[in-house]
Image (cartoon, rainbow, N blue to C red; front, side, top):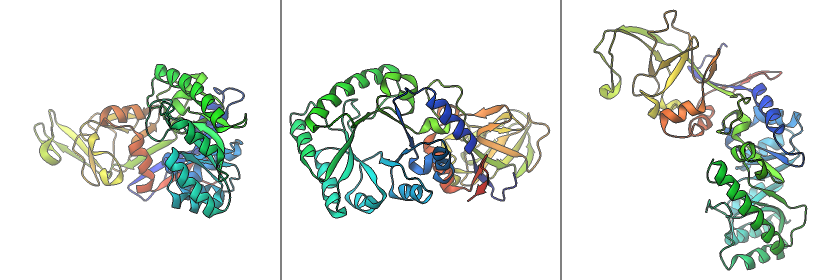
Amino acid sequence: MDVAAPVWVEIDAGAIAHNLDVIRGRLGDTTRFCGVVKADAYGHGIAATLPVLMTAGVDIIGITSNDEAAEARQLGFAGRIIRVRVALREEIVEGGELGIEEWLGGRDHARVVTAAARTVGRPIRVHVSLNSTGLSRDGMDLDDPQTGSELRQIAASAELAVAGICSHFPCEDADDVRAGTAAFRWQAASAARMLGAGAAVELHSATSFAALTVPESQLDLVRIGAALYGDTSASVPELRSAMRLVSRIAAINPYPAGRTVGYDRTARLDRPTRLAVVPVGYADGYPRTLGGRGHALVHGILVPVVDRLAMNSLVIDVTDVPAVRIGDEVVLYGRQGSAEIRSADIERASGSIAATAYAAWARLNPRVVVNLPTPAIR
């Protein structure tokens, strides 16, 4: 692919469509699907992701920012939009014309949403968050003796229309999800009675891991983000990564055994070595913690990142790739031929979840979309 930039992010829209089919095949017949496109579709781009969802008939999406909701509307999405975090009053007011359903995070936040609804001039649909799973972030805790009266106040508000009761799991552990699901079912039923909520109110707590690992967690609605893009710790081998982080080799040099490499001399060569420079560094979003621990793919061969990264370059050992030349493709995340660097590889080497890196890559680098009728770069 002819891209002038030293590093770019390649998005495979066909992989997203494939993953959507796989996930839907694992859901119950009555479970609604919410495609989460927060953080610009986890860095994959709403403009690349949403047309795939719309073509497949997905009519609910999850966002966090008004900009994401506005982009979805501009792309022609006419379905429901759920904000999957608590929002500030100004955000709620500004997003009022976009039809965003708000995540309601407690009594005090209910007052914020109520005030915003009065400014907007119409009731706002809300999803009442419960702390059933023990995340203790924005959920109302039913063990608090005041929660019952607070729920009844929400029910009595003309500015709040309860569309759902929700929660969020703190752990990707099947037993934890089962216990949390049982607690949420019981607490949601109790909360629904206090809210006077009818059968149309949706119960939802499952994101990718829970929905794909513990079927009873699926309930009325699932919020699927990471798995849509091929990144989940759930055991679903059919899923495909929809992203590659790609660069090219800019220089190659031989060095004798004993030479040190990179800043702080963190590496020392134990054999005569051919080192290649790749114009990617921590300013491009590649985690510096991968220096000396991460890997790249060249000619489908896994090679180590040798040095402690510079701001805009890193060094790889290509001694075992005899045919390597300047200009050859280097893949730092994703597939090259039959080989692949997965999220789990990034996480094991860096000590952090891969999403902290890949959600930012496309904000820092050009994005190329493949497997769309009209491939585009921005």
